[in-house]
Length: 426
Length: 81
Figure (cartoon, rainbow over the protein chains, first blue to last red):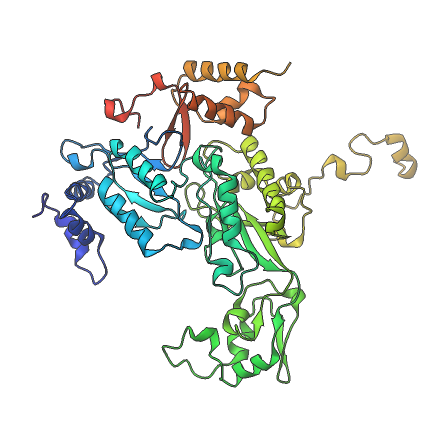
């Protein structure tokens, strides 16, 4: 029996798609506070303004993140959501859960919270939606002691690092994404659990340029696997694809008849750098022009593979659209070796070089990508001690002036005029 | 002469006590000792939270610091949103 009339929300149950309203009504049968979420949301629809108050001082002892305070501003009307805090649970690397673990987590949340979840949040955490302040410490105790799991990052903390499946299931992975994700999670425990920066900072690790965790679009620090040498090619397998004996894209589009595979149309003609061609029945690639888009490898996985000299590209500064709109990360370091043998020391050096600069120069609530944009890429490259290269250039410049720095001009600003006049008479 | 950790802590507490706004960003504390790196200042400020001299206030996306006596919990009816 519904506690509140929700005619506006009920409209959202009428489409052919799954409805969160239906889910909440079902959940309200065992967690009555969910009726009050529906009631408050209905009121927000009517008033056209949120009735949530976001943020606060709630948390668990010793941590400065992982819990986001949320309160109702109409608690008398909706007492079930007077407190409705969010708990962020750190996801395991590659999102590998056992069903046993998932059941245990859900039992825990049924016991201490509303039972409602968001799987997963944009950072990758499992988000538990809605609990009261007095439940936070018991929940945290059981989570850490019984399930051996931890809270994720929130606020101005390093957010829970996330990665793709990496070497565990993917033959294209150019480094062990899960291992570095776990290593850096442990290395930066303080930064994850306590605020450290002017604003949030996210790591994401993708094993290859397919970038299955969308690191280039969603992380301040994206480590994307790549290779230095030539794409590995099996010409016999190329012929099998052309003959139609191997399904293209690993059979991913096999549900419909797309006609015979056409290597010219489906691979060569849509190579973004036009670096492939056929010589007789042999596929040729000008690897110096390849930008690692992965399309040819995705289409013909049995014939083409990433090269053997593997590592990663570091892209910095992606963000979602809070201030100036969504922004992709900028490629800063084209190739870096990623090795567990040195405990990722060289990657850590790059991370801390960025942090030292951003913490000094970044404004409050400014993501590192916004700081880079404000200060300019040439300055950032200098800070990072990276030589500028054509791949750093986003677009042809529109400003006709060149502003030289003193050290770039022979003799600097203090040139000897007499010596100059000897060569260049007035 | 470089300030000791205790002197920096005292400067941070004074800043958090006297600032017009009860909540401060970590960057607001940098000037308490401009010779120290921001990461060191962050560690000192977080150490003060551990000692109960400061508290975290988080919006979910940003975290700020405040003196506990200048900030009231929502449950005490003095919300600061």
